[in-house]
Image (cartoon, rainbow, N blue to C red; front, side, top):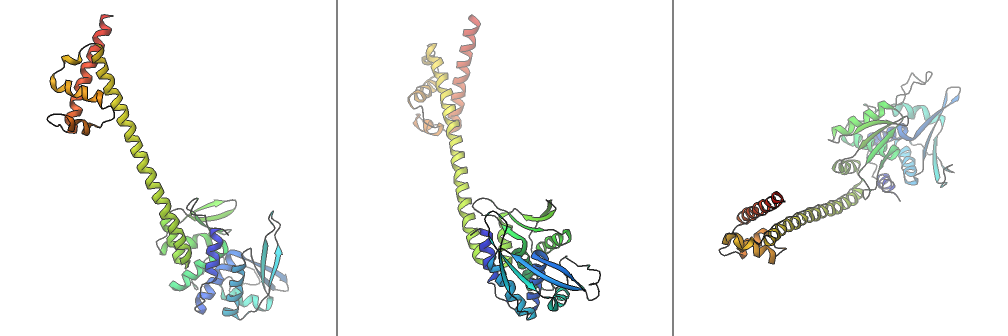
Length: 320
């Protein structure tokens, strides 16, 4: 089961509390996964289609609670490669017009012109519970969240721009910023920020999904932090090794020119220590000196040794 399927299964089990939020949820479902057919003689048929059995059961229950409509759920095989089940819920003509009016798809006087409104109905999202119910229905109808192990991405896919904009506006009321793009004739409202996806799941009422998402997110962030520390330490170690090799090479130049023993005592002592302790840090070298010297002091003396070695090399090239 995909992560999105888990979320929809959990949302489908959400308690049905009041009539207003039930109608709001159905209004979202008809706009995102419903089909309205004109059968002639001004008769309509409404069909919900989903591959998720839990969502189909949810629609069946919502119709019973909100409109006392008892309908049948039929099952068809999809034409897709994996031949999944497709669950169909039909609303007959005798219930269809009232359903369309109550869910604000149609007004009392526009059936002859078939002018349906697929935007978010302001008259139904009248309070917090109704807004959350509408978003819940929208997610069950056209939403998805990618597996957090792979990436952070949540989206709502709609064929109508006004509905997509309405969803963005609703999410914005809860501090969730979504962007919209046009993809293959569909409007995709998407969220990439992991914290905002977690907030979305909590807003929908998918508490188990929130826990799973946050657990995965915590493990990924810990893993990434460890990798950053390792990379930083590796880079620092490489830098220390490179610096140490350069310092040793400078001292070997002095030895080659028989100049190491001609160095001032404080530089000669450090030069021999560096040759003996090739992997020691500047701090460790400083602690070995007598008297001990700080890191910056050691670095200053090693730079002085490097200058002397460079001068010797330049003199040698000049002679040649």
